[in-house]
Length: 196
Image (cartoon, rainbow, N blue to C red; front, side):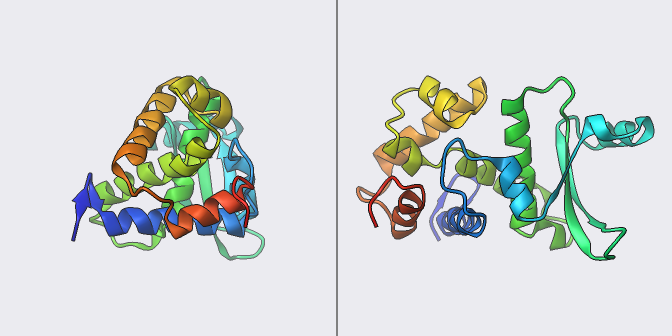
């Protein structure tokens, strides 16, 4: 099984396809890709740290100074639901977007259903999910991103992440297949960047 990076090529492709399914499920078809709207359409609850009382805020900060996700019971319906907590105090919106995409990744990839023991792989998968969901290389290609500043402006990524996303885009461009993969064509069609 081929490997590049932290897990197999097959797993990278599975995650990319899951992101495409998520975009289709949530009718996401424009950039910058809106993590808040995606979470809402998936019925994931978003809770900013600024909405928490002091004790809950301290507990949240103890878990993560950026954010985390969990499964909680809805007090009205009794049904389980995903809740994403994110730190909106002292963090810019571009960093918050990364955090929310990362936590959506944990939820959408089913990490909360897994037994303990694979936390590092789950973090790596959620990081890749966030990277690809925020700035899919086919979209960077189709929107003619020629430098990290283009990524920053067109995809509302942070300055630091724009550099990482552009570097990943360059790797994809020069070392990947010479033609779009079928799921990449679907992605471009979904975003109205390629005729159906």
